[in-house]
Length: 210
Image (tube, rainbow, N blue to C red; front, side, top):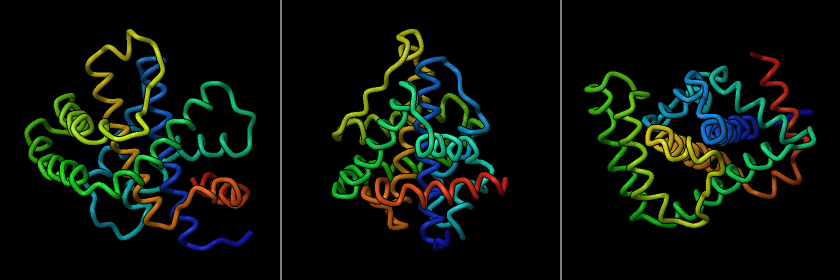
């Protein structure tokens, strides 16, 4: 099956949305997540210009988790855990559309992101808890005021932990960034239903290239 560069690009962006959703679910249910999968998502928030969609995430290999989850959603019978993750992903795509129409909220996010490099310089890396807390605050001041509100399901002992809650919010913000990229590359809801086979083909080829 042939496909265009734009179709490939939006599949990459969709994989990033799925990676964020998967990591949020893991943190909420187990209190753990792979830092190697977290870092490129958070770093994508700092990238406003890139030579390719892959470059936003430092290369397609950094989206291995998201590609695997996207493949599961497209070709396998889904468990309760996987249904929860696709619910997060769909809500992220919907929130991005609300955000695109709300210049005031977008300005809040841009302002907070512009300050992020200073925090990284001071604390050393984007995964430092203080930097993640800054991203979480940006989410709370902006996205959390939009609907559909993303209710995260999991264990209270993990969700009530401040560092876990901050990381969940930071990843949801990164998921919104991926959703913006998906839409910029021509992503539309109907494609998820009517082009599922093509998306699965692209996903499988990207996985095979890793």
